[in-house]
Length: 72
Image 1 (tube, rainbow, N blue to C red):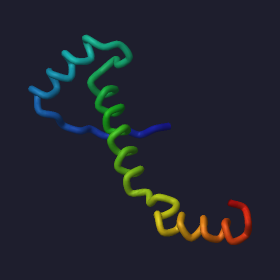
Image 2: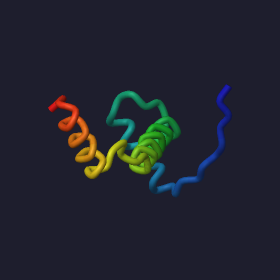
Image 3: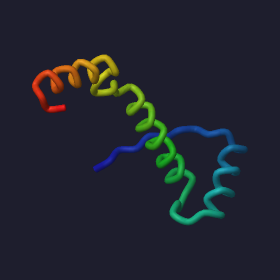
Image 4: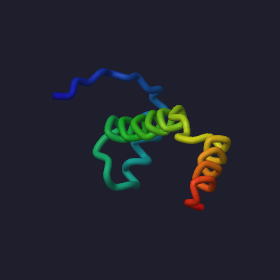
């Protein structure tokens, strides 16, 4: 079971989000919308912190090895 916590928003922002979700389908409440947005933002930041699997130097070394072995 998922546990929840309370996050306070300025009233003006809450009203703006209420207006926004009234115009869009898919969100039942401000809480649903804010949860969706935060998940997206956190996932984006986590992805940015994930290093690329290979640097450009690594790619060049791999290509050289493959060429030396006759694969390319």
